[in-house]
Image (cartoon, rainbow, N blue to C red):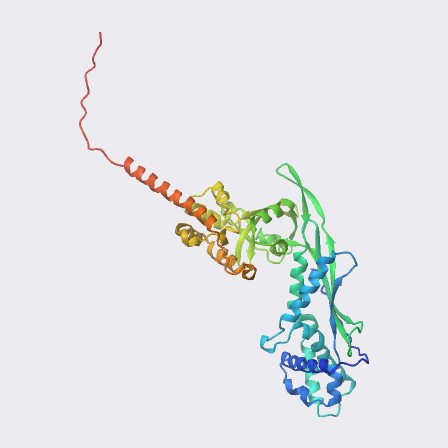
Length: 452
């Protein structure tokens, strides 16, 4: 496992002043911070005017997000990651939502105030005053909660999603390093520190594999730096595939470009950045091996880590596992697809003809109009995935009054199953006719007549 990074911080002060409005805002944030630490928010009201001024004037700089090396990442990617992350911090609450402390406030005024109280307590600002006990409580609480390391987990998860979304497993992958360092004092106030996120980049490595007498290139999967851990090669434990294998043994993971093409075709509901994230997350953090009929083993691709939307197939050579294609949920070679084919007597060509090999099928077809298909989807284990896909559709992106249901597609699918039902009925009637027993009669053999 890659070495975990540790953050060290050393608050410093500048002699710049803060405006009255900034100080008023910092006062509000200070109360939120005390609630965040489960302390009495009125503690700050017991501070003297000078104590308030010194502690509220310590403001951390706006978080800095940029590439580790200049020009190593396309500028639009960097701008999007920076803008999206800062907006996320301004709109998302840390801790109890009712406290309404945003991550942006936590990273600037909030952390500045709480560390200022601790720092000034160490230098004797509160010694011998009525506020000494209050400052001590704050200081002890800070020592117990490592907010620098754990308080911004949601923000790091957000950046982790963004960097993976722009990464392509057969080309280039992005990650990031996270630290708190002394700021450059570009804003007013007693600047102490600054959250720094440095975006990293790694080019893919590849290897040639021969399978079924065909040689193809496969790309090695990388776990990029994620703010907590350094980069490392992606692996999967052998025991997940072979239960009797040693727990410490593992396979390196490779993936063929063919997989990405099939994934794009069949996961057609998702935007490219979501597909990038989903394929990496499935093959690293969310590895789940399942066994189908015939002891075939597959890697499940799950939505929200709960609902299957397809499966990756693979082959093994030495200590390498190579992902070589992606099966849609309706494939007869998946657990759900096998049940569906038996229930509806479908062939592989029928699935492709109807478009059931694509996720859009399950959001655009009105199954209430096709009861036999709806019931089969329920029995085969598709329905929960279908509901999850419905919920994943971006409702805000739809025009007012628009409907995700495609009526033309629904009529097309309904016509297919109506015709199938008619065919079954007609075959059933023919079978009944062929089973009718004629009355038993005595047959007399006619004499053979010789024709002269």
